Amino acid sequence: MRYFEKISFEQFRKDVKDDKKLYESYKIPSRNSKKAAGYDFYLIEDVEMKPGEIVKIPTGIKSYFEEDETLLIIVRSSTGFKYNIRMVNQVGVIDADYYNNKDNEGHMFIKLQNEGDKTVAFKKGDHLAQGIFMKYLVTDDDEGNDMERRTSY
Image (cartoon, rainbow, N blue to C red):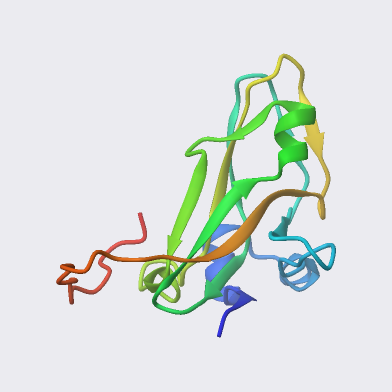
């Protein structure tokens, strides 16, 4: 089982702002075509990025998925190609135990940098990044680690 959901309004107030109307208005990630691999993440609010600027963007979203899966967050190819916008960490790797962690409920953020020479403005509802669920493998001699996640990074 895997799904996206909004973080609680209490977490939203901490991470974004105390605005119930805004909280109720943003969309859960979705695929925009039958064969799309990625689920588009939509902007909660307008974002303007000056050349060289780095912006940390809250998604208002957390995701549940199986223990042998990961969620990769990747900038949409059109965002990079058209606007020279890059994710600061290139690819976000979300682990299954990030969901509902004690620090922030598993709220995912996207950190982007404008590597172009022009200011770029995006509107609420635009989709700049996408999430792709993937199965992963471990080595045959992996002993695992029973430790619980301690921080949200």
